[in-house]
Image (tube, rainbow, N blue to C red; front, side, top):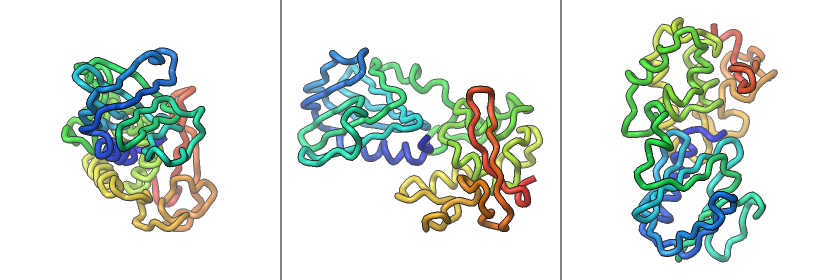
Length: 259
């Protein structure tokens, strides 16, 4: 699932390409929206909120999308060949200059212009948003002090923007196991500061890295390195599925660097 910085970049790309243009063709390829026609509507802007994307169209519409595990938005010129199969397209928005295609979107809904709260009101403070507040994020984390930090960081109701990659890398950088209860974390403020710094550093990068090295195989300390040497100390990295039944996600850690 894309991390918050990837979604932020997607929002910037859509905003730059579409804002101020009128839609010349819209094609929603989901049954509930199949008859919607947005032709002639002005695109007023796209923003990200955590891992959610909000596109304002005309005076009445808010297009809410979420990439989930496999979704993506692509921008094409009219003569360009699509880079994903046409059958994966869920929505196509055409303007005089661009074609925006949303592929395999996990969430696709057209809301009223005043329904932002319905779409993203449940989210905690956004690490890349104007509402970011480490104090509020820590307050929300401490509501369930016995919960593992690995589960709590992925819960977008606590803070918005962290996915599985940053969950593992943040725990590594702070020397804590992802199974450590929130109440046992000595310095949650430092954890929040590092989370903010990582997403800020990567939001404009084409190649995501937590080590500072963008070479293939060297971008991350432990994430995706199960059975391989820790990038810091050489100890074999471990992986375990953690989370509530049915919602487990892979967590990676180094037994020597994390305790």
